[in-house]
Length: 198
Image (cartoon, rainbow, N blue to C red; front, side):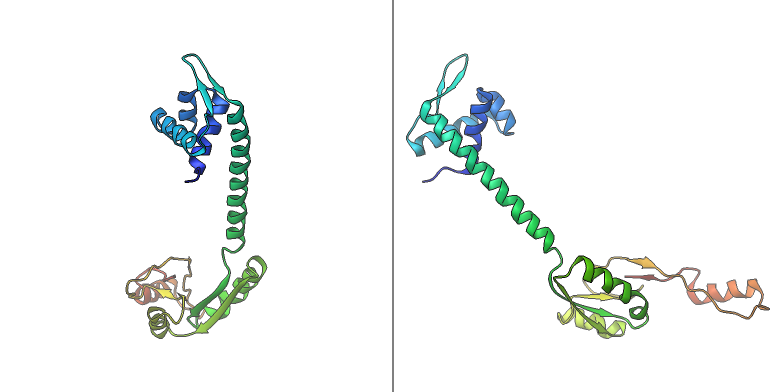
């Protein structure tokens, strides 16, 4: 059986606090849990790490050597975690994504979007497919694409949708047409609400 990182953390805390209660608080565990962890570590290593008295806790000579190594192991472990985290951030958008886009959106949204993606996520491979809403959703349901950029409202099955922006429709009219007529046409066409895009 080998020492665990948790046991090494307990031992390091006791050596720094020189008090089991304070070390337990620093590790966010009960004192009995910390004491049991230290006891298990001593049993595994077959050495006594600390001399316990009613007034203080002393680190044995062998215990100090163990503590020094424990500190190095815990530091190396933290560095490893940070390396993996940094790598995960770098690869947050990598691999390939298949995106279906309806034709009415593609010409206006994709050029600036593609430029930003190339700049910030060079490892990402984006495959685009232009399709009407219904066939695009069918491809999403079947797994042939990973996401769909479409206009809503539109009935969708069990998929997650996220509104990206709203694009109001504005009428083009002859200058002599009355404003009241324009408003009436808008209300009749859209119920007074501009469609949103997802």
